[in-house]
Image 1 (cartoon, rainbow, N blue to C red):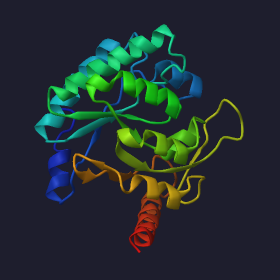
Image 2: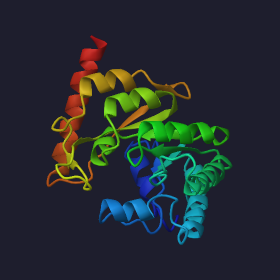
Image 3: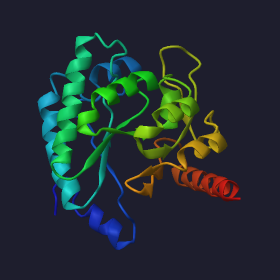
Length: 239
């Protein structure tokens, strides 16, 4: 029994549920405001970098033990300016995390939203030797105000390893998050979006579409609503 996971994975698998990925949560992240998460998110924090590298090593071993192929995490507001010295430090740290996972046979993907698609593409190209991919979350692009989710998905398609099915409304006040809403009630154009991501493949298999619902009063019903939308759209795509 692992002290972090306990017997959760065995319970899921006993119910016939496949665990297709895990997420590395970084130490010290503060989501109170956009400003606080920009300062503390992902691998940005110098104060927590040692603890976060230790976490990455632990998660790599756990993923290998349970044969989980993919681990995702937020890089942490990568600077848009390629000349920013913080960018080099953050990319080096992401490379170290990716290498730690790779030594255990586990791939890694950066979750989208905290930087624009062009900024993330430049980072991914620099990280090419480390094999870093993308966990694409269309709602995060809206929540953080980092670009159009459809056009961003098209641009990032070669790196996409997994997709979150999540929706959002943009902020009405600059400097604040947008609003997380049930799938189909936000601005993500689902029919067009699924035409982009449904054909994508990774390691010879279709990329997984993972429904994510982080807020709301009836999240089980919201998840069912998202699944219903996916099933309707799949019928349209196959038709």
